[in-house]
Length: 175
Image (cartoon, rainbow, N blue to C red):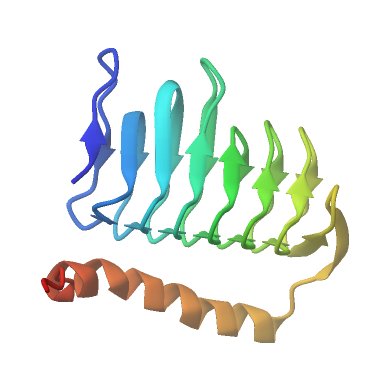
């Protein structure tokens, strides 16, 4: 597993988490239960602190970082879409961060909020609970409904099974 201590800062992972071999975790990082971290992801707590809550999916090539002396907090059951950049925000439980989006310093993404693909949530911007935000810069454009919640609960539960499934079934193909 690609874990690195940096200047006395050591990552701490729950034993049920799964980190893809090409992902990198550095420094002051805490990873919760059944967190799945995909190929190419970088979680870098070199001079800030990062906490990733239980049952969260960190998809391929996501970058998570924090400013010096600050903390990036990612709640439980969060989905961080492919290629997203997460830099010193708070992302609350059940949020969905769309592919190739950016969540900037000190932004706050509410519980069950959804950030559209390619959106940029600017510094200190607040996305209320249950809201949908899109655009550059991101603006609130709607609200999450019950059907969306049911659909995303299924998607999120699938990622939770990836921890076990990848551990038990992933093998490199040799030619």
